[in-house]
Length: 272
Image (cartoon, rainbow, N blue to C red; front, side, top):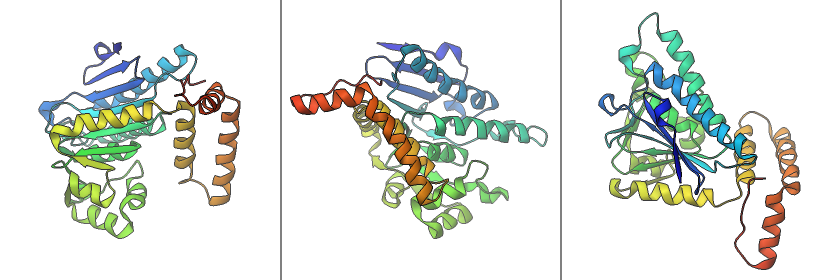
């Protein structure tokens, strides 16, 4: 059974499947290639908070995975809506952009970007804030900001991109504004996988389903500790990892996992 929260929003669609534990956010501005308006930037954190509320009301972990996509088949997102950026409004937009994207990155459950079509500028920055990126082969990804006299910044893109494609390639992509196809991006590690457009949704559903079938507390701890590794040295990271690991040993899920292994059956995760 799916719960649809879309009537609470103007520029996105948001729903949650209670049976699978998979949430979905769709940027719903296909006429503008899913450019993010100031309203969209306000609504993304609200949608993330909606999923946090689902967990709180459940008394455990209900949301196992979230998929973010763009409406239609022309674009994931082409970034912030340039028609709304002016000399006076840009600082507000930049601040809202940071808040929106950091809310996606900081959400506890794994987040997948389903990329079909253009994924450029701020749209690609949004995709980089997700834990996984799965694209159609013919999608176009890139950072064209250099041709406006700026560069992708504000949410750490120049720090994240080298971790995926290497420092030299990251400089090349940002300095030239070159676009990559989804297939090329998969080869270079910018996205995890690419598929023919007609197979993209099924591939995303399969991967989201695989994640949703894993113990949710463990997945959230893995996400947290790996993200934290960017911010601390090795010794501090090891200690942080250990402190995140220990509480899992006292969970119902760990007890269930051990029992299921002993009984040679599939575990039933509760997120507790």
